[in-house]
Length: 205
Image 1 (tube, rainbow, N blue to C red):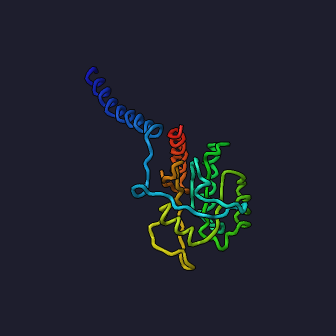
Image 2: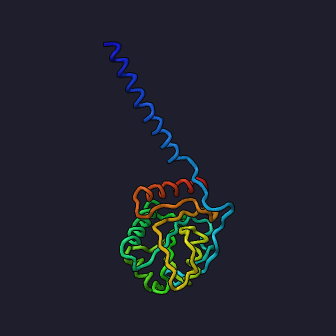
Image 3: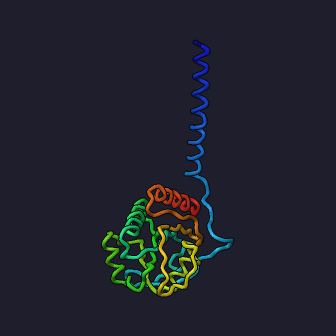
């Protein structure tokens, strides 16, 4: 009996110790591990000059001292973009009233997505604050997507036949560095984004 009991104790220890250790490591990484900086060494975001759904100018200076979540979308997108927008809305709901956190959504179809369409889109999702839906010059927006936010690896000139689309959400810190890419249609990735925003807030404290 004693021998059998010792065997079971040994088996239990072999199974539970790794599980507990994994749980501790996962908790530590989720709570305290520093998130990386993405992009080539000393990569900097390019400045831009666009307008939002309220016809107000927005540029890189507008992001001063803010944590930014950016994405690239278009208002007539039937499935992916609404999911991304709904996910981003949930992200902001985790940080109510925190004006240091802001979403900026760049339209990849700026010729159709004028200020009025962006305003209607924002109203459709009940978005009233801390969120810019941006439109402007297509060449500029596509240059930002490729060279600044690194959301696609394909080449292009932003011309009439150029089209890009990505489900990625991009996390930008207060120093205007890329700190993460997340699938805006994946609840697990959205949860990770929320946790990483909390880490960035701790970095700034």
